[in-house]
Length: 304
Image 1: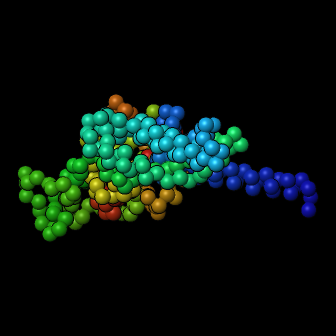
Image 2 (image 1 turned 180 degrees about the vertical axis):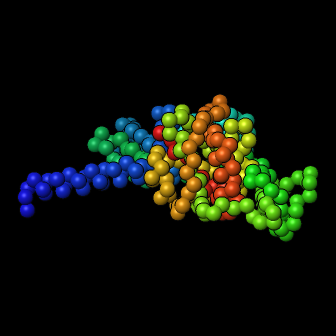
């Protein structure tokens, strides 16, 4: 075989592997200097470094350095969590200061970090890479308690999702209950069945958050805690983040046929809430009335 063709083939393989590696990295946000947050996989990642105590016996220096590295990792996790954004108006550090119960639960959760790699350096130092999931205990402690009550903006008559009868005018909608809208006695659902939602926010200065919203140009909430089951939000996170649409469409959160919409603006002091057009807002709610993907947090944001 021609040597040049072999080299070209090897180069093509390297380029494909490199591209796949980049795509597999997901959306990772550096938080301060202590660690980073993998918002695609909902994981907090940090590294701890420990040095041996020269006053300890030689046999005790490595175990001591390992303990020091784990303590350093714990401090870094806490610093990273503090620096995360919770909502458009609140950072995690504010929530922890305001509520002792939240702080206690978060501190307990991060103490259960998982060590994914340990490196013993020639200097005697030890480095440990650790991870803590955002979902589960951390999300349960931080996410708002009040979820539900939103009504899909699809027009038509409101029906009870259990009995199918018209919902009494003026009657409050209980938390966690989603009314169904129908037109002329038929459910107002789109002809195409969508399995999730992708909002393309590239080109906007958006920050990832644990509880962001999608709003229309009139300020109406199209997606957020009003339209989400809290159980799903705790289990998988309210939103998944990615860096490109192609990778997001393959993510199990929204696959196999997600609706893709372009954001037109970003709002909120923390720059976390995406703004979409009125037409796209109605399109999303019409699509969600069929599969109810909003309630199950089958939503992804594309950020640069």
